[in-house]
Image (cartoon, rainbow, N blue to C red; front, side):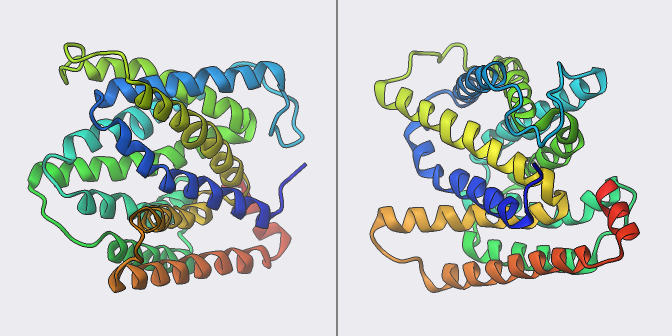
Length: 311
């Protein structure tokens, strides 16, 4: 059964809230080799997702017959997704953080809604919708206020740009294979393909020499990140993305830094400062504008609507 747009929005928001609120859990594994730890997280998630594929082959299939394995084109897309949007994204974060404040890295990643609003339609041979681009720009401005400002050298900026590209590639490439494979298979294959890529990247990073068994706290954190930040968040995001399309769903990426901010404020026991609160309000306005733009597009004549969906 095809999801309603309101349910799809709720799923995308839920996925971004899970990712944003899980940042505090990620603090528990900062002392563990980063790329190796991410490989372990994705391996755990892939095991769960493939178990779901075997047990419930039609789960989230959207009423279409469950597909078999990915074909050659889909495998190339999924491998590229794992390379850029997962392994590459994590590697860029690892390179950026010693050279840039987290706020700077977060601001670059927070610009993803604007990139998706522009590139999503262009990859489908359509013009970007001006209202959606404007909405994405408002969300980016709000995200910048939430993240604040900080220092960064040239290496930090380049690596942050790489993380920005990885964040965009994650949704763009997933959208290309979601219609046939469905959210569960896309998430399962992407996670499985990311594992060897991350382990290969860990070799030049010198992580093999620092490998160790995780502590009980780290193991519990990796389990939580695999279950909530990967399995559930990926399924929620991919399911909503398939219905909303890249540019509309992309605006909702702005929910992620908001969720991170509120989680940090709850943990600290104090409200966010005025600039961050203003950023949340600005981002919320942008998200509302983006969603209203989607409603206007659905009011077009049927032939034009079909052309938009085909993209």
